[in-house]
Image (cartoon, rainbow, N blue to C red; front, side, top):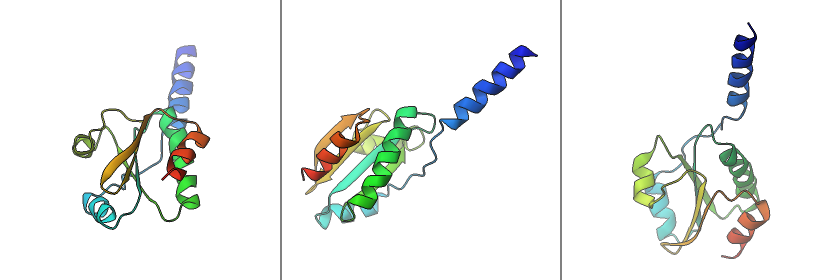
Length: 122
């Protein structure tokens, strides 16, 4: 009985860390934004990643704070074609594009000030 309760606790705890996010990356939207000269922030995530959960919270707020910037995301394990296209090998990767080129990349960054600083520098 004790083992069952421990297992239930672990499973409930594990699910509380799950990321609630959808893939918003679309190649057509990404390419159009690049052609229009928009800054694009892309985030790769995994639904059970606690670092991703922190990043998503920061990026969701950033999307409200930087209305002229396009924020896109994709689930690393499920959207392998996107990951390959963008050369993103790890979830928790944040990449910023400007003028059709990558200008910033970080892996595992959870510091809001550093993420905001990267966005503001463009």
